Image (cartoon, rainbow, N blue to C red):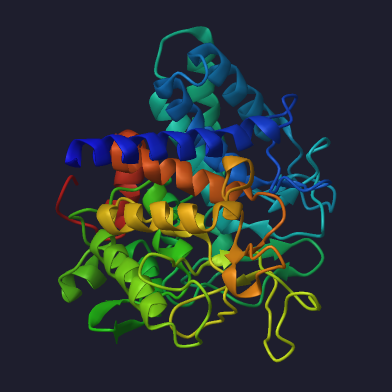
Length: 432
């Protein structure tokens, strides 16, 4: 019986992982390697999604979903584009100072939507590049060029400039108005950003560990439902940096003082999510310990006369969080599954339960951004967000792989830039 259950779980993970991978084949421009932010018509490229794609190609090779030669060619096309695309202060460029704009035209690669030069999304992109560089280590001309491009692209980023003469890193910059007037306050997905910025051999941020501590000084440590943990409401914050970095047993100064580590912290955050859903303070349909996942995701917005309670506020796309909200009954099944390494048994129970109860949340077998059981239609099916989002598919695929084989974690543990960045941030112990 136990053996059957294990086999069924493995089959489920196979199906979900392969379906998530198909997203990156369906919405890529093969001419430049850019990947669309969403599957919706007219969607631009998100550079963060490209970072996930570069990390996922090695996984695909390991599983036999694509050949090594195909993966190398796709990666090279992408790296060549970012290497050769225009960098400058102009409004129609691709990037500046080694960073890239958050959203790019899928064909020309130029900035769209007057988007910001995004420090965090550049970090996700570069993390994907470094992953590729650690995996494709053959001495062939193609793989040698691939590694050289990765190193060139990483070394030209001026992380110091991104501080704007302050201790911490700014969130973004626009050619029309300069640096954005807000920064990173509170725990967030920015650990990978700081690790990359500290690990740079060419333009590291000024201040070293003190700059990192200036950011961690904004952390909020809380006790919720009996769990002491580093608070962040949306679940993705507890997952994104973990897609690349194995935080098990390594601690910075903040975590040493709390006698915790970021991996354990994410486990506690997962349990807080489950307990919130079990308590269900707003009495939303479907919420329980096996149906949860509040995070940044798409959601319903007014008006929905055939479904919505006119007294209920709906938030559209929002960073939903636990326990302080916002919460309108929208759940992200992918967010629960992306916590698989932290709490495997609980997450697998939730994945099975949600898939059985709300199969509509997996159109074409890929997770929708969110579903809302409280807004059931005449057919009693939950409301489901339209299309698919690349970040959702990427984090699901990578976290399943880290749970199953630790492939990405193993690659990045051997990356000298990651190791240097962690050490300069004050991390000690464990595999370091």
